[in-house]
Length: 345
Image (cartoon, rainbow, N blue to C red):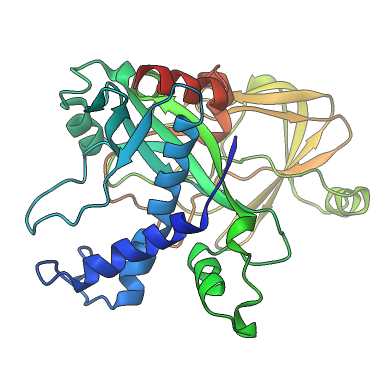
């Protein structure tokens, strides 16, 4: 589901961090590192997130219910905590403005995000909201991103705004504001999240979710088969988890079941391992957290059980579901979900 932006949307997202930075009551330091932030850093912190909020609100408004959504563009007093307020603070109808009947949390998502969800603390706080009344089906998390219709130019929202205001060839590499649009990727309720989630607690590890790579070209597959690697045959059984690095295997995922017949080729180095799956039949690997991975007879793939990032140790308690498995957990389409929110908010 895609939504077009207006030029004034970009101005609102520029004006807000400027007002925030000029407000003498607001701290100029980063809450995580304590370092002082300049105007550019404050703009970077707010611009994209606010633009995505505007786009999601417009998607709800354009769903035909005649309602307008009020977002939070206020500069709050120092010491006030509004981090866990809903992103849609009010609903405007012909009779006036009222509080929303659904709690909508809007999040930016990128193609590299393996999981979606909330921190345990954030979820608990949101569920205490009077909007929800302990009913987790009234909390919806909307995941969206911005894309450009012009793939030849950089999709950077602040760069696009500067280009619209400053006529200088140095900005030609950025997309135009009218080429940038919002794409809503998924919508999940807190009820669905909590019923299907895996809890990755503080101190546990961040693991890759795409365990089966793209099929190799025939020449590369034959070259790998010709090497004297350790071989393991698996047929209609639990798949052994062979980590590529020295971190422990994931406990949170549970078992991986192999349907079909494969030969695993294990290449061992001093500090790492490479595992190749040589498919001896058509089949699949299934896991209740990550979903299904299909393979074809005669094809070879890399099997990647590994962690993500230089430091994969998690610093928070997280309630997550794997993005790749969302179609199995949420049956409604994005459009159906947005229409439901529009009717009931």
